[in-house]
Amino acid sequence: MSEAVIELVDVVAGYGSEAVLEDLNLSIWRGQITALLGGSGSGKSTLLRTIVGLQPPLSGTVRLLGEDVQKLDDRERRALMVRTGMLFQYGALFGSSTIMDNVALPLRQHTTLPEAVIVEMVRMKLALVGLDDLESRLPADVSGGQRKRVALARAAILDPEIIFCDEPSAGLDPVVAAGLDDVLRRFQRLFGMSMLVVTHELESIKMLADRVVMLDEGRVLAVGTVGELSDSPIQEVHDFFHRVPPPMGGDHDTVLQRMGVEADEGA
Ligand SMILES: Nc1ncnc2c1ncn2[C@@H]1O[C@H](COP(=O)(O)OP(=O)(O)OP(=O)(O)O)[C@@H](O)[C@H]1O
Ligand SMILES: [Mg+2]
Image 1 (cartoon, rainbow, N blue to C red):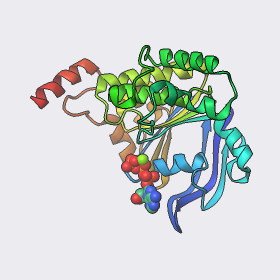
Image 2: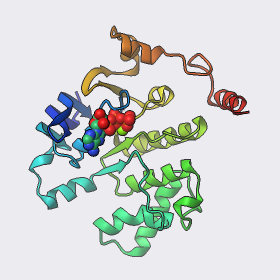
Image 3: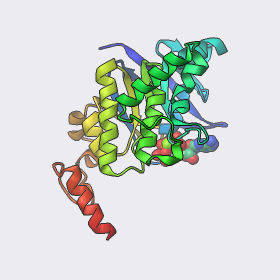
């Protein structure tokens, strides 16, 4: 097996004394894109927050990039955060700052690089996510899909070893979502970044995931490749991978076909 970027040992996590995640044991491997799925309320966001140390586990051990997250002091925690990037479920761009300033933020916070270098680094990342020429706009003045790309450029600006994405394509139309998936894949291929991506989208999972972790009510229901989980004897797992995507069936319909169908529906 390759090296683990995340290791959870007997982790219980939740709010107050109420456990949302029960006794989780899980490793996420370096260089892979791991998809995290599970129904609403199954604990996916809680798991992400616990892994990055935003929320201490009620018990158990969380190791991120080899470090026991709970044992770090503030300085060590900041150093660890520089090695990770996070794309939150609900946007989190600063509305009154330009796209340039939004993406530059981690560089200004965590480095003493000269401004000219920062500007060049931001431009490089914006080009990589396919957003040239938008640097002086405000987030409100670009599309939803473009905002996600800005957030991804910011998450990747320090060339982190791992990026966490909480439902990156939620609310995007299929073509835009597929474009975002391409960008995620590009980052993983170009830089060998590990990624943990929360998503419900079967198309995304098939296109992105080297490995899938399926949660159910705070427990790991299944772990494996898309192929392995498609053959799972567990009914819910099998059903998820064989469900017929509404409104058109089949796994081979193209994104454009589905867009056409959606346009019809909206008419
Ligand atoms: N701040 C909070 N305080 C108390 N309970 C919370 C808090 N945040 C989440 N929960 C509860 O923890 C459980 C898991 O929530 P979580 O946000 O991790 O689910 P999720 O899998 O990310 O769901 P979704 O797919 O809807 O984003 C839910 O029952 C939720 O109500
Ligand atoms: Mg969530």
